[in-house]
Length: 179
Image 1: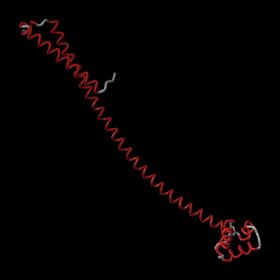
Image 2: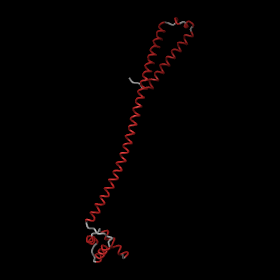
Image 3: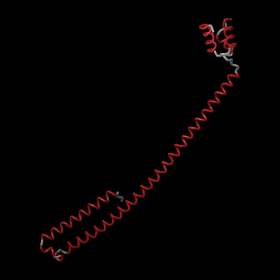
């Protein structure tokens, strides 16, 4: 059966209070009777009972003191272990946070490299497909000439190697501004 420190202390206080109360009652009764002043006048059975009670109370008190001391040592040991574990967890958390920051930085760097590679591949692919530069004057002139011949926007885009939107933009700018 295991008790916590507070209940053991409470039990010890109750037993000591009962002992003090019994001693108080005994002293009060012994003072009331003049014949009780003589220790020999106390009946032997009562004296033996009181002595046994006092001896058992002393043993119980010593046991409680030892148990309380053990409980205190155990609690102190547990607190120290918990403090050590908490310190270890704080160190692990700091190391983990640092690793996360480093991983984020590496991901950003790798992500930037991937974007640059994708952009370079796109530009290379765009150039490989033979797409023309819509801002070049000769391309604009060819688009306008094909439009005057009545070709559709799709046909002009194929012949000029431009996107449909670029062809439409060149034609619209020519109509609006006569560029």
